[in-house]
Image (cartoon, rainbow, N blue to C red; front, side):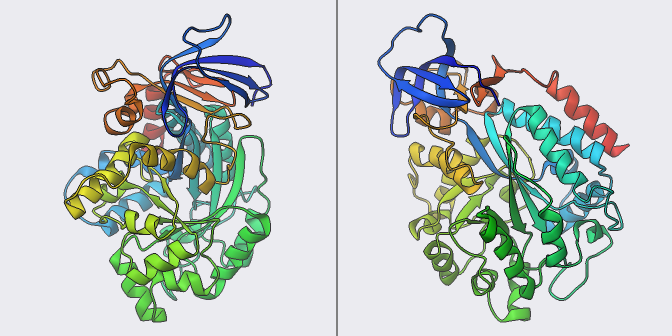
Length: 447
């Protein structure tokens, strides 16, 4: 994204295990060329990042258009399934141009929150009624362009969504999601190409949305490309019950039988699992993306994140429906949810939660050289203020705990992607007036 050599002086830096004061980064061709510690004052010409600098945050699960639902779905009562009807109505109004405008603003909001990479779980592929656009990937290309203009990286997780349920055809709302079968999905998805700021991955929307005999087609597509593969997994008990009725096993077992689980696969939510499911997921090295703010907003439940990690499942975090866009809130919510469930404290250290929000989140999205502050890594950084009303006053060295358990997205002061300031002093450098851009895009979508 940039070839200009730069030097950054970090007042405090999280180096994976501890907070180090006075760190200098030399950046060349968008990567960290050297990390120098023990520098109490900025060297001449260095760009100064005051506060606590972390590796850039990875939002491993996003549906950008859900941002238009914020607040509107908070009226009255209901369940995930009633919320879904409102979501479908919003999806019906998307066009490539409208989706581009909305996603550009949403990704800019993410940059303001310190997010440098997003995993976009993308399933709105065609025009209403299912007619392909002249460019069959017009919607996906709109998202890729939106991320570039907002200055962040993206992994487009192109989702196969072929059925309304086990053995049932798509509903009228879902026709624009479906390619008809997995082979047609694979042919369309193969037209999408990686680029400097973007990776192309795959997704199985869910076991209810992809017929069992077609799961292996999606898994094979991802395997051949060594691309990330994500899947909504056991988010709802109704999905589990229907899967058992149709196939005599849990969704996790069904995915294992058809070759979907594995180290490049991430299960999103992984909420309602059996002990065998936890072993299948962890034992196969399949990742788990927890989305606590969405899971509580939709009354989904609390997933067994600690048990999954203990079995070998790497954890990542996502803002999903964007009830809020705040990876610090997602990180602490995972710990606090586990405290509520077990009535004990201290399941993850601040360092472990930051790892889920950074290096493991990036790995889940196919960016294996991102999410750490070390030589050779991509120069993606997030700086958190240590002098706000939320973060002021901790003991020296407690920067990681302050970031995870006190800071919010509002405390992000700088966001750097590939050595370039995307957010400087709390203002986006590429998208002027992000709140206005969000308001205009949502207003246009509702018109």
